[in-house]
Each structure stands twice: as structure tokens, then as C-alpha cells.
Length: 478
Image 1 (cartoon, rainbow, N blue to C red):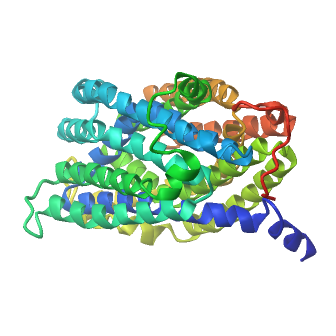
Image 2: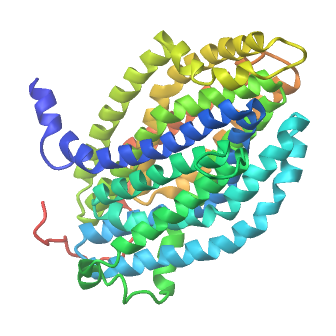
């Protein structure tokens, strides 16, 4: 009991981790809920749209991932300036991310037309390819809002004001979910657009989120203390500082999404049942995974602030307590996946039951998907603990600015542990659905081991990503 009380209290204890992280967990949960409900709606509209939604969204997110990975480091810079008692530099850090986000919109517009060739190369069923390409095109064109929202939210999260991030994301979800329902099914006076409507609703929600963040940044304190409006001119030195830690983070994020994209495309070669069951398992897993991402962002903030204060001991404490909370959460949800997978899978029954696959009667088709889904959720439960370790240590290393190691580790693991072995297994028909999912589990365990060892080695504690004056900061904060 004393151990738990000691872990809970004090700087960077579980209480502070949850104070910063709980709003981010809710924010991530709202994003997952939007994605999950969209897929449930699509599942009830047409099974081919459900099968197309995950590959289409993953490949689109792959296009966005690099740019988004760079702008996640806005929060790291803000946290370190905040910890080092240099609030006047926060505005310049924010605007470096904003200008980078706007430039990314041009690149994303050029990438938006590549969906057709990508999904044709993947060899997915013809009925799914066109839907995947359309979903990808709209999401990629609107990806600039996701990148920009990440940069804008970095101001609030870096300062520890995560309640504002939560409220904005909840309001975005409050718009997206009913708008998606209306545009998918043609309700509330809207046209019935199916998967196209789902994509339009997602982009509209992203634009609305950016608008809300922008309005919050008009607060007088943002200018008085952090020079948010007056620092709008691009500062080359600050952009260079952002890119120094952000480019490896962007490449890492791209590689992570690329690995999952390749995995999804490979599973798609195994047929509609395997693809749909995998998509459903990923959708359910997202409900549990993204809250841990919220804790990962929280530990990045606390480690970044502690590094700015020249207190690596507090960074270690924040990481240990974040890991404790993440593992506690993953144990609980893993038990649900093992003991009661059926009710979760049955949420997707309506559309799958109405589909026809190679002459199978509709109930038999869903029975195949459900049986495969039960197996896949057990794999999710198996690797969830390693996933928590990987995500938390990744957040800690990023908060300290140790992004190059993370990038190189991700490159090696994605090619040598996930994509290469999974391709060989699928290409040679070895192991059925178990083959690629065993490779996915090995990939996650490899990342957990590598990031954990890197953090424990302690080299990150000597890194600095902001300018320093050689004195320990003292600005009245604990």
C-alpha cells in the first residue's frame, strides 16, 4: 500500500501523469470512437465498404504520417521551453510547426491521386479497389488538417493544458459522428454517399478541429506570455530545431504506418474473409490502443519538461509511472479480448451477413469472419502488453529528443521482422492467418525490447534540443 501511495504522489507521480494524460486518453478515445463508428456504419451499409475502409484509411494515413510525425515534435519543443523558463520562445516553436503543416498540404495534394495504382498493385478484390482509392483520395486531400491540428495541439499539450485538447477533440467527434451517419446512409436531408460520405465527414471534422484550436490561440495570455500572434514570421533557426528532432520522428512514424500498411495489403491477398476479419480486429484494437497513445504523449510532455528543467530523475519517474498505468490498462482489455470477443465482433454482423462470397449463404459468411476474428483478438491480447511497453518508452525517448535511434530501430524491425517474414508466409501459403499475425506480434515485441533497453541505457538524459544558458532553470515551478 505504501508503495502505491509513493508511486501516486509527488512530481511526475501517477497523479500528475493522469492529470496530463487522462484528457489525452479521452482525446485519443474520441478519435478512435469516430473511426470505430464510421466502420460500424460502413459495415451496415455494405461489406465491401467495410473491407475498403481500413486499407484506404491506412494508406492515406501513410501519406500523412511523415508530416504528422514532424509536427508532433512541436509539443516536445514547447514542453522543453516551458520547463526551461523561456515562455517567449513558445510562439516561435508553434509557428515553425504551422508553416511546416501548410507546406505539407501541397505535397499531400500531389499524393492524393496515387490510390488507384497502389490498390491495383496490392491485388485486392476488384469490388474493393475503387472504393479504397476514393476513400484514400479524399482523406489524403484533407490530411493537411490532421497535420495542422497536430501542430496547434502541441502548444496546449506542451504546456500541460491537455483539457483544452480533450474538449476540442470531443467537439470534433460530436460533429463527425452524426455527419458521417447522415452522409453514409442519406439521412437528415443529406445525400447517400456511402464510403465517400464517411471520408467527407472525417475531413470536415478535421477542419473544424483546426478552427477551434485557432480560436483558443486568440486568448490574450497566448500573446502576452508566449508571443503567439507576434511570432508568426518564419524563424529559420526554430524551423531547423524542429526539423532536427522532427524529421527522424516523421520518418519513424512513416515507417510504423508503412509496416502496418504492408501488413494490411498482404492480408488482403488472402481473401475477403481474412481482410474483413483483420480490419474488424484492428478497429476493435484501436479502442484500447489509442488511449495508451494518450499516455505516450503525456510522458513525452513530462520528459520534455523535466529535461528543460535539467531533471532526468523526474523524467525516469514519469516514464515508470506511465508504464505502470499503461500495463494496468492493457491487462484489463486483454482479458476482455480473450474472455468475451464475441459481443465485440457481433457489432459488425449486419453488413457481413448481407454479403455474398463465392456462393456462401450470408450467415455462413459472417460465421467465417467471426471465427477468424476470435483468433485475431487473441493475438491482440497476446501482444498488447509488449505494445504498451513499446509505446511508453517511445514517448519518453521522443520527449528527450532521442528520435534518430527510434527511426533506425523502426526501419530495421519493419523490414526484417514484419514485412519480410509476413510476405514470405503469405506468398508461400504458410500458416494461414496465423503466419502474418505471428510476424506482427514479433515486430511489436522487438520494438518493446529495443526501446526499453535504449531508455535504460540512459544516453537520452544528456540530450538537449533547445538552446541553453548553462544555468538550471528556476521559475517558481516544482
